[in-house]
Length: 355
Image (tube, rainbow, N blue to C red):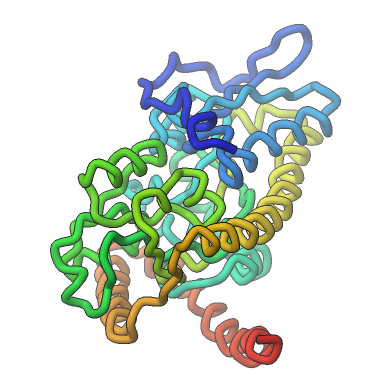
């Protein structure tokens, strides 16, 4: 898929006219607006929301239909949760940490540096109390969040020059999301969070020196390899970034029970498809990028050590500032610690053996 096709129409737009919390009814059917933070035609992040919308309509026999609005088409890409909270749209699609400015604890429902992989994250959400904490925090804003998939481990970033030491990071302008950006700032990086459609133009123009987006599939689709052939992996800050379906809680409660269940199960089914898509097509894209001369490198050990130290400082500061951050962090780490031991003993061993 060409980059232009899914970037069209992604310019930032203002918020739409507010709606009531009751479902909009037309011809006996419930029709909801569904803005996403991403270009709706982008592989992975875009197909996640379009697949979800198709599933809901099919499973409900057309009783509930969702009109998908590409990032920036109805509301700005980073304002999806606000739009759902205010009633501009009944339902939205994003990644939780785009709204972490509301509450730093939200980071844990997307991803945190040196944190859980995709499978570990969904295990914590489903069985380790993560979803209950998510529900508790979102309820304060009148929202309900559903996990709808994961990118898997992402790329650490595309750089115009090699990173051979911590000193090479100092002074760089870098597009980077989440708490990884805060850790990078402690090492002298000017971390900038740009919405997806703005990454390529900023990288090409020289406004930024480095950019992380997602992984091989989407990085190639967005043309980052046209700017540089140097990509660092893995993403220390995004070992498994989750996507969400976020619903206005009043609108959700107004739905019949069977349609509520359909929304939840459609998100769950989409989450399985999404991770499979990322795993398969990231592999294919990686092969093509290597054939085009892209070099995949790991950050040097001293850089990783420095990033771990910077991350610990960021996490400690946030835990002191926000009791909810500390509460969610404890639950998260209560599973992460044994999960790391398990992964090293089982998954780590099989990766080494098959290589």
